[in-house]
Length: 190
Ligand SMILES: Cc1cc2nc3c(=O)[nH]c(=O)nc-3n(C[C@H](O)[C@H](O)[C@H](O)COP(=O)(O)O)c2cc1C
Image 1 (cartoon, protein in one colour):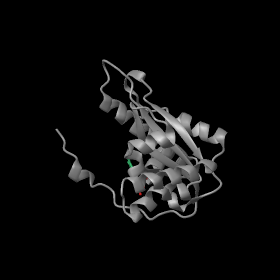
Image 2 (cartoon, protein in one colour):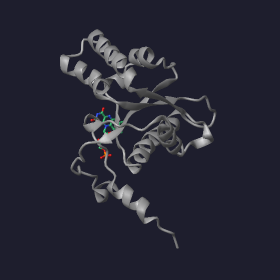
Image 3 (tube, helix red, strand yellow):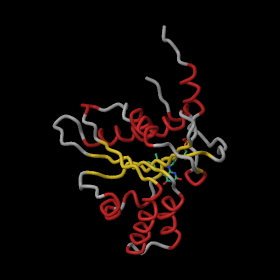
Image 4 (cartoon, helix red, strand yellow):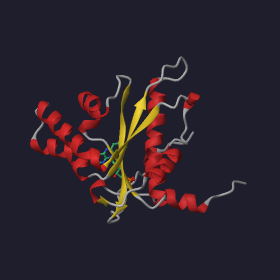
């Protein structure tokens, strides 16, 4: 018979991200965040390629990133709302972790499986933060997909890209539950 872990199951049944714009200080200190990154890295990883790394954005670095986002948005001729959105997560952020996908050459493990592994790391980081009592939110936005932003902001190499920008802080309000998938509708049995 399986041995249940009711606390863990209850967490998974009720977990809910906290919108980044509702997060505030205090944020985890470096030791605390390192523990969260350690938990996050305990993720399924086919071939143990470790196709990820972390860039921690602390408050003093946010303004520079916001400015780069605005400059890139302008260069891309985005509308004012999109530009504001691009810089907004940095203007408002106090602490965020960029989870960087680092594609590793492998004769056995396809690139897509490496991408999946990094997605698992992102969710694990959100969950580790939530389970520790912090608010957390996985964001992307157009900046995450803009190669020039990745290069200028984080000096990412060509085989690297942004999988997620995970904002972590103190929650000010818990959002209402959102719609969840209808399991019957998306599940078939054979
Ligand atoms: C890859 C990825 C990128 C996301 N980017 C954004 C984003 O840029 N802005 C946003 O509001 N939500 C974004 N989300 C959604 C939130 O992270 C999250 O799914 C939502 O707040 C509800 O999460 P919950 O199921 O933990 O409650 C993204 C989710 C994923 C998986």
